[in-house]
Length: 159
Image 1 (cartoon, rainbow, N blue to C red):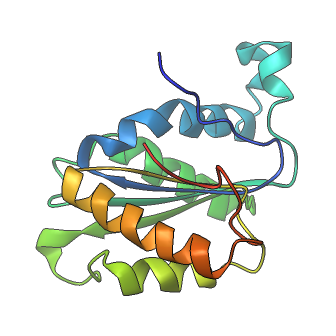
Image 2: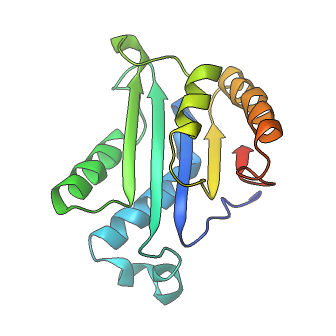
């Protein structure tokens, strides 16, 4: 239903997910996990070739509590597995707001994160509560206007 994530087989892909906003990305995260574990054959021959060796998924997750964070076990297990095995195709940035240590996802945070990437991301997705989506949408409009060559049409998407 609806439009797909429209991933590229290579390059950096970034997801910002707040609360239940992680759900649209769980299939992609599970896909990366299957491939990293050498279980890509279970996904079928076409699925195995969708992600190349130079594909990377960086996922930012924000939730008020650890207990309410959907898929946290999978996210943390995949991150630990990648670190243990030296794989670089998945990275997790976790923000638990009730723990009070992580910065707010405001315009400055968004700009700092996007400017910190060496290569331009192929896709940047956002899915979360309405206020979060609106904050990202406004900042994305500013970023696109100031740097259209780096962030062309369809790169920055609020789902």
